[in-house]
Amino acid sequence: METGLGRRQSRVVAALPLGLGVAVAALFLASLSVGSADIDVLAALRGLFADEPPVTSIILAEIRLPRALLGLTVGATLGLAGAALQGLLRNPLAEPGLIGVSATSALGAVLVFYFGLSATFALALPIGGIAGGLLGIALLYVVAGREAGVLTVILAGVAVSSFAAALTALALNLAPSPYAALEIVAWLLGSLADRSMDHVWLTLPLMAGGWVLLLASGRALDALTLGEDTARTLGFSLKRTQLQVVLGTALSVGAAVSVTGGISFVGLVVPHLLRPLVGHEPRRLLWVSALGGGALLLAADILVRTVPGPIELKLGVVTSLVGAPFFLHLILKTRRERQ
Image (cartoon, rainbow, N blue to C red; front, side, top):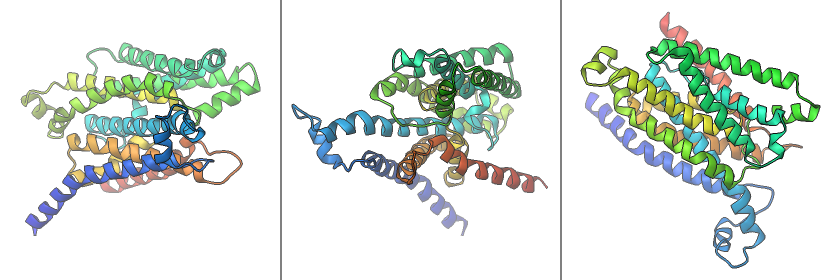
């Protein structure tokens, strides 16, 4: 019986990346197809290579393709970062906002709105968000110190996040006009609408750099499941692993938040759902969480475009409506297991 269960688990682990990859590809094509105008995606793609591309090809290239690419890459970033942080902290309730970089990235973007820089050039907003995220990394290590332990980094992240949230609230309170305040609030709710390929090219290198650091930590995270002393015996440095995960999360999530606004719970929900399917191995969970995060955010973005209403729902609102009850369920489940 145990052998049969083991073989079944192995088949699930082997088939999961393929299944998620197919789901991501299908959702990506669906994202290109969904919108106010009916478009034949294949015909529009062929039209991109014509001397005079038709309107449908222009809509595809300038509106829908950037949105789909950001949905995939931002979702993959949040899922991957969540899995890496949960592996580092050995805590299934950890998520990317825990180290404060999401809040400082949001603050950087809010300051761009506050000072009116978003009207000067199109990329001011993501640049401000990226600058805020990089500042958040620096501030985190100034507060925590270079030799800080995991708990100290978490506490420093909470402090940085709280301070950035307070400054964001202050900017809202002192907004020069109701329209500026409305712009700030709308951005904080999170969305992929009205993004261009410029946003993709600006943020993709930073997200990719973060992915490399997070994926490279996989073997060390596997060793940490056996305990810190065992991991050291196997030749892994906890400080180096911690730096890899924190810096990788900061770079990738900071860049993602800078262009999408606040999108919550993807990094919490996706790794938790997929962990039992990979045998609770952090290294395998990293890859599948990236695919799962991309699939979840693409699906959520398709949902906000298809739900009828006078205005489009904000993506961050939808992920919060799904994630908050799930988070409550995790807390109650954890409490029951400890009793």
